[in-house]
Length: 540
Image (cartoon, rainbow, N blue to C red; front, side, top):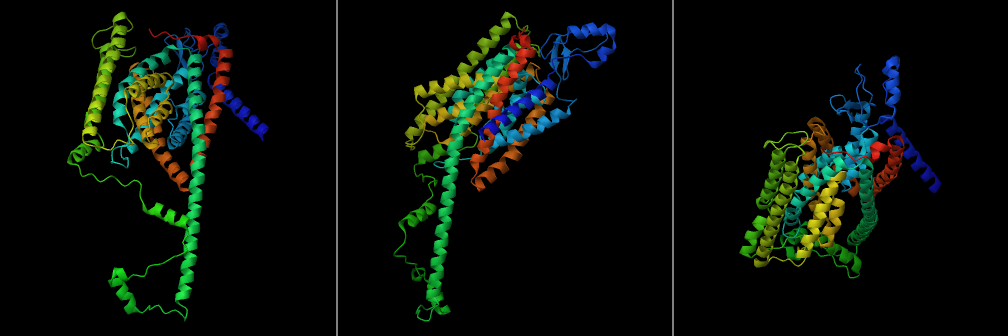
C-alpha cells in the first residue's frame, strides 16, 4: 500500500513537471525562424532563453521568447490573460474556482493551493504567480467577510469579528504588505519558492491538527446522534407498551371525550408520564437539549444597555472610520510618490532619493500614527466596559505584552502576505486562540485582518502595472464565485453527514503534493535556467 502511494505521488509530480516544462520551454525559437538561414544563427544563440531572460527582437520582427512569453522591454515577459486567453488558462481558471471553493469551506485562504496552478496551467514563474494570488485571495476573503459580518457571539450579541484587535493590527499588516510586495519584485525566484514552501509547511502542520480535531468531533457527533436514536427508539417502545396496557380490558383509565376535555381545560389535570426506573444518563441528555448554553444575558443596567447598543452594531463607525481613512491616506501617499507604472502627482522622480525617502518614512510614520490611535481607541473601550460592569471574566485580555505580540505578528504576516501571497490566518489564529478567544471569533478576526494584507498587495501590484486591471477583476471574480457558490454547499453537506474531516483530508493531500512539487520544480529550473532563477531583479 505504501509503495503504491509513493509511486502515485512520484507519477503526479512527474506529470506536473512535464506540463510545466511544456509551458515554460527553455528552447525558445519560433519554428518560422528556421526557414531563414540568416535567422538560424540567431536561433542557436538564443536557445537558452527562459522567462525573465534578456531578449532582442530581430530585424524581421521575430520574437525569440517561448510562448506564452514575449520580448517586452528587452526581457521575456508573460502575456496577459486577456484578451488572448488560452485553453489551458480556461482549465486553470476552473481549477482555481474549485480549489478556492474547497479551501474556503475548509477555513484556509487557498494561496498555497493555487500558486502551483498559475505555474503549471498558466505558465508563470513563481514570482509572477504570487502577484496573481493576491487577487484570488482578496476575492475569497471578500466573499467570506460578507458572511461573517452577520454572525454574532452568543453572550452579548456582538459581531464575531473582534474589532479591538483589528484596529491595532491593520496598519502594521498594510505596512508589512507594502514591503513584502517590494521583496517579491526584487528577490530571486529561488528565495520566493523557499518562502512559499516554508509557509506551506506551516499550513500543512495546522491542517494536520485540524484533521485530528475534526475526526474526533465527527466521531463524537455520530455517536451522539446514534445515542439519540437509541433513546428515541426506547421511548417509542415504552409508549407502545403503555398503549397496549391502557387499551387492555383491565385498564380503568377514563378515556372518554368528557374526561379528555376536562384534562384539556385544566392544565393541572393533564396526565403526567411517570418513569420510576428512568435511566439517569438519558435524563441528563434530555436536559442538554432543553438548556440552551447560548441564551444571551439579560441586561438591566442602563449604562450597560447604552454601551451594548454601540458594541452590537454590525459596522461600528469608530473602527471603520480609522480603517477607511488609513487606506485612503496610504493610497494618496502612493499617488504622491508615484511608482514604476504611474508618475508622481507631486513630480517626484521614480527611484531617486526623494522617492525612497517619502516611500519609507511616509508609510512608517503613517502606520505608527494609526497604530497609536488604535491602541488608544481600544484602551478607552476597555475602560468603558469596566465602568459599566460588563462581565469580562471569560473575555480575551489585551494586555501590554499581548499588544506587542499582536503588533509583531501582524508586521511579519503582512510581509509574508506581500512576498508569497498568503493571507496570514494560519499564523494569526493560533496566537488569538492563546489569548483565550473562541475559535469562531479567532477565525473571523483573522480573515478580516487578511483583507488589509491582500488589498494593499493588490493595489501596489496594479499601480506598478505588474498585473492588468482586466486580469485582476477576472481572477477576483473567479475566487468570489468559488468561495460563495461552491463553499456553502460543501459546508452544508459535510456538516449534515458529519464528515467535516473529509474536506480537510482532501486539502491536506493537495497541499502535500504541492510541497513535493515545489522542490522538484525549482530543481528543474536550476538546471534549465540557473541564471534567471538565482538572479535578483532591480527595482529601478
